[in-house]
Length: 298
Image 1 (cartoon, rainbow, N blue to C red):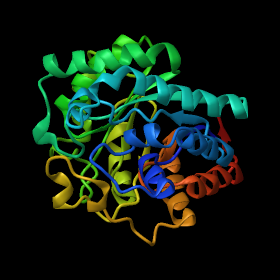
Image 2 (cartoon, rainbow, N blue to C red; image 1 turned 90 degrees about the vertical axis):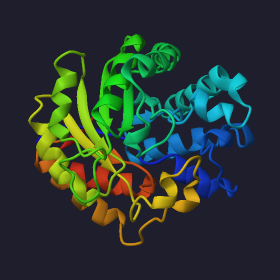
Image 3 (tube, one colour; image 1 turned 180 degrees about the vertical axis):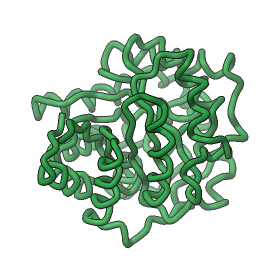
């Protein structure tokens, strides 16, 4: 049996649901200003569900996002607030690791907005230097193209911590990134940049088996954490969207999600969890399923 790293589930959608606030293009970042402590409570719920990692609520804290709403002066403070909430939750349970999240610049799921590596890497490095002293690993998430992943992975090295690289794959063909490039094309990155693990995230769970088949060939620890959206709508792929443009599916019960994740483990994945619309109940059921199958969670 394997030792499995159990990631947490989605943060942004949980915050929207719990806060009751109208979603804005600033996503979950605004919630830390308006509802201090809510992020900590969600981290705590995931730890109590069995997760071994808390992923910081820093995914969308980028200058380009904050400048739109005249909050760029809080860039550093917001990162520190997100770190504090994760540490407070870990302190309350007395265990677990913290992953510092680096999300895409400009927008998610849109390979056409990929910035050149020499432009993107310094932007990621600025965040990595803030997160590095306070996290156990850096998680570059939801990268939609090889170039986007390369810029993030290169910048993340400034953290001095292990870097996990996660890509978002095509919902209809999990062997390909949203750019159309093959998952196996990530080999061009890991040949030149130290990467500790490769993952796929924020795509439908049905696409992840094909993604796992590609990631497995890269020779690194690998895994997946899928979302619970029906699809990524065209309206969400416009500038400054809100989560109102995304529809959650009603069939993805904790039991069904666990079945998907256990299949990834059967393929050799050692890092699993959930992304948007996958909540604490899903993680709790997955933790129980892993233990029932004889796996350990660390």
